[in-house]
Image (cartoon, rainbow, N blue to C red; front, side, top):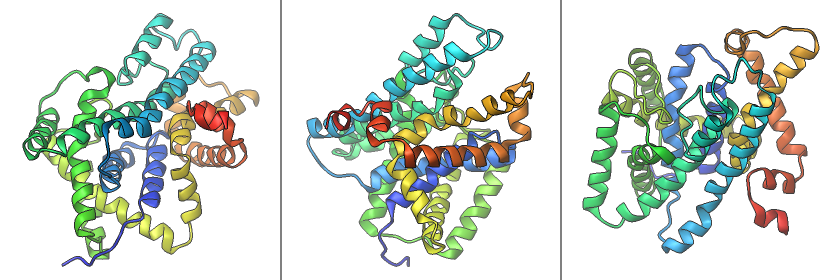
Length: 327
């Protein structure tokens, strides 16, 4: 029987954000597929931290997610529309703006690519609002889990404002709450078996995306993969603590909104540097797939420097946290 042990949620979130940055680095598909299952750990973390409180208090404490989406989304989108070459912008500029306003970040060729990760903020906000209600009633909770499974099985066009992605996240909120209740632990054998299972699932079922509502060849198998991915991320968060790498991952967690919101924009500075030295980039994605490990290292470095040296009020302004700006 697992021994009781409290999870370090900040480190877990830091590791999960690190994985998000990795999958956005143009990694080979076999790597991308493996880490694409890890997003469930962030929903799990919110469930683990869940506190019963009034609805107004919940909205007040989590509205920053919506503010971060629209402020960082506006900045990212405007920069993209201003700087992107004409041959990249295949649609009228208003199309990119409308999709951003409606939370349709799944339309990858009709949104600012550097703004795509921001969909997570809308999803998480809606998921927390939904969980506030379903958590109070076992029947509603069962219905929400059933709907989450149905959405995985039945192919569909992603909903506006990431409503369907929020529903898909709800089972992991519940799992996080249950995990905290029993204070379970992931042992080395659990980690090894979970890693092997995730390798098998990701390489046979393929990659998944909550943003695009794509769950590989089989939605139920994808759900199993997301469950074992939580075990993997939990254990990795304990490992970074054991080998004294926790400071960097704490920093990622404390700056989560800024990092998720701007890591792709900051990473794109590499293309500016390459262009300055005369490198002609005709196909960005083709280049990224070839030098993904260089891009990832550069992105980690530039994000770290931004976290460390950008003034707190500047970072707060960039994510729409106007309360900190005014202090």
